[in-house]
Length: 407
Ligand SMILES: [Zn+2]
Image (tube, rainbow, N blue to C red; front, side, top):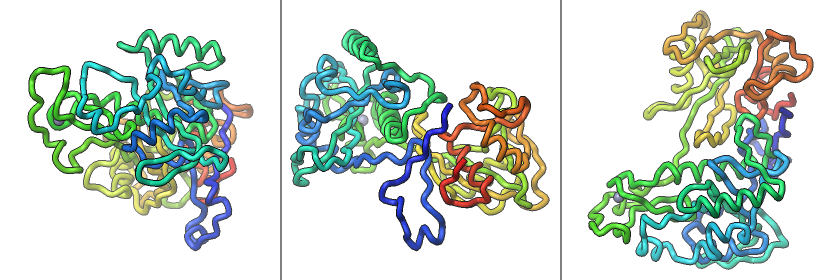
């Protein structure tokens, strides 16, 4: 798998702030770095959304079973509203949110449609909003085109048509080589469609909920035309904090360096092919800081006691909606013996920095894929540059520098 070029944050490329001089350049990981302006405050403005969707330059990212429609593997296949008419109609945002809620009928399913944002384009037509003047840019949306009832026929026909135009469905996350802007757009689209799909019922009363705010919020309407039984009171209709918003699950991932700075702690899961290792990772628990989560997970998984933890960078990981918080941590002297306490890992080992450096050059790739040229059978294999684990190890291999690594 070719290593994708790491994107630069356009407004930070020539950054000479005091912060960057003190802490180094901001580091960007794969799936981050998209330049869409999400305009979150325009999501409830259905009049704006309706205008945006019908602009001639509006584009729709299509997901089939959460996998993207792509062309030539490196770019998304962008659809136009016209392509989607059999599925979402001519005016997908025709009703105001108030009317959507009032007319709610849980028996009438609609394909999920999410407003992703506007891409800056000075030459684009102005789009009027209801309360914020007009905005300019190319609108992007995400749409679920999975063939399922009652859209099986329309979705299947659409997919067939797109395939005839050269599109395909990228079904393997480990073979993802979308260019960075598309990857970031896909990350947003995938997490949003996944969250909506998996949250069809109200968390307060268990009845069907309705997607509003262009896919970013789910509400529990007070009535449902599909049911003759009154829905009754629901806590989620009282107070803003009771509404259901999309989640991001904070996950720590750390490159743990030995006390003398000469070795790196790596672990492997049973499902990994031989010689494959990666950095240790785990979900944060309520009531602990990121640093504490790193110390807990590393001890639970490998028995090593960690001291200082430095946060390096973060990465949205849309499988389904983790926020990977990358850290570099150092083991405490004399507390480096490995013991697999929780048995989550199949093995954990200390590797020399030199072994890691070699593996970053000739041993990376997608799980189960052949290594690049120059790899010696039996040597360490590591995740590809799309994974933050690779970036953390690159930073360690380069002496913990915070500049974008060049591996
Ligand atoms: Zn409810």
